Image: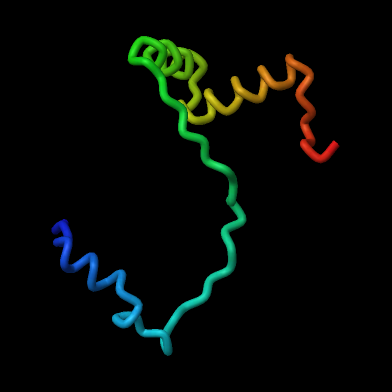
Length: 82
């Protein structure tokens, strides 16, 4: 796979280069959600990734379930609208 030069990227990002007559529309993704960036120290990352492996979960699923479990323990509502 080749990398794009800065000039190629600038050309592609310029609206005058777009083919407005052949623009495609797509339905919204049903998997929309909010992404959260979380920074871990190397030691904490090792602890979290080992915990995920021990439970046979992906790292993302492990972090998500741990956060939701912690929210439930602290009285967090399952439905933010309620």
